[in-house]
Length: 243
Image (cartoon, rainbow, N blue to C red; front, side, top):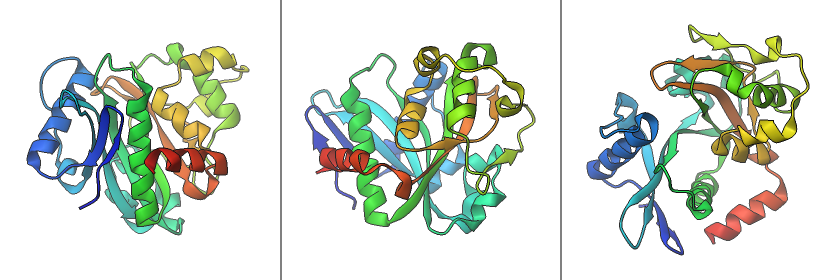
């Protein structure tokens, strides 16, 4: 069993039974739809689920699901439902899809995200993962709310051509082709989703288009992070939290 990680009030661990998965599904539904219910789908049974709990109250504060894959099976990922990922089949090394990453609405303690990433760092190191990937979501489906963010992604963070995902979803916003203006950096970062901001700080890159997901009421971009590209200082920081 993979060990739990405790820091201060919070503990991060991997799911051990169906009750843990159901708790994650309830939190996801609350985070995504702002009401009680369960965000459940078939892929949940194939994934591990990372849980961040408040050790004082026992309340679930954040969760995500992780799916280890090799590049030849990237078609089995959730991301492959929305993006054409055949270019990534040539990637040499173990991969980890991170999905459904969310937190309890109103929970803003930065230690929640910090310990989640520390737990992921332990898992990546233990399993010699070479690439992390997933879908990073913007709330809502109105692209006008995020033009500076998309312009910044185009200018600084597009995927290398050898790995770049192609369009597959029925409705996409091809920001790399459509945007021409220089981004306002302050506005771009203000509206960048926290998870995506973390990926970018570690050297992550994105698809050249966003998928319009009406079911979850989001715009999302495919996001990849090659572990070898993470700056040494950032790796030291992550491992220090995980120590």
